[in-house]
Image (tube, rainbow, N blue to C red; front, side, top):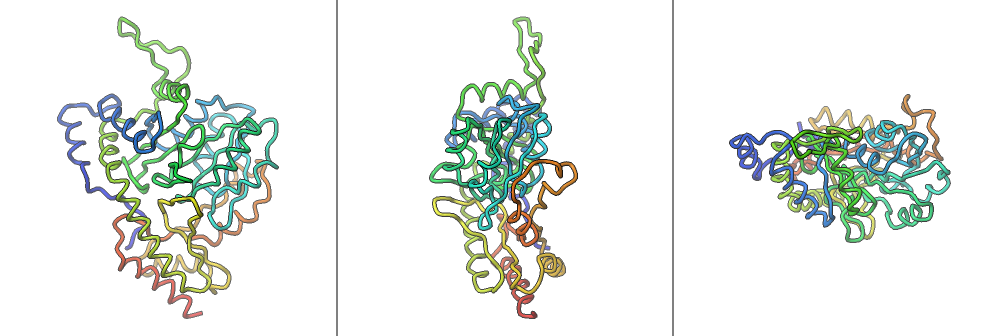
Length: 369
């Protein structure tokens, strides 16, 4: 089986984790927690990083840090993994769904203004599969209507927009270190910001709003949350972070190879990289157009028979039972590409021969039609 996307563990992971085990610093307090936060902020060139137990908790933490809650609305893509949408509901707010762009699969910023009401408090751009949302226009709109911007960069570590790392352009950015992400800690996330007040507030909320009194007792002035990452996982994160530039370079090289191959296949639309952006290509994606002669699901079935793991695009969240009653605009592009999109094997360790195997299987389908 050629897997969709698996971890690449070949740096200092064993060394740093062993140090945690040798010194007994394995829980949520330890030097690697602090180091991971500092190194991550340094990599992104931002001021504050707050490590969390997963990407979902980092998104919820961002919403709570900004005081978003009951009666508020947050504009978000429907073409996304469900986490960002769920976190909006976790805090008592309502998601409002906006359509996506056909060429990059991300939020269509030109359709945001028509959805803004007096209840709108934030926009949550999801940089899906590593693609960058049009952040200049989005920030203009957010400023005009006095809205917060929370970047879901959980799939976009290493991606850039006009020289800035994704996740650092809005008020707050969020990342994930799940096992299939560019780097992994097994489970984990990070919330980042350049705003000092947000940084301190997020750290306070994520560590049970704990204040240690002079005698060592714990005092809690408000409700907090246990979103802390154990030191042993942070140690793995420090090691993985050291490999990010190399991993992004490999991912981009593989995407270029995929693109060159698929340019020759009628009915397969390769992924694009918009001008002024750098895509980390967390997952390499294609659209199976009608002229290809076989459906997206037929392609996935054939790939599976050949030992190739592929995955369809995310199903639109606005069509799922918990969110069918939520407000949204015209979702025609979201509905269309959700039926045509495929994510192909994208591991850092994938070889050119394996990419050729994927390509040839798809090309043979077209030749039989």
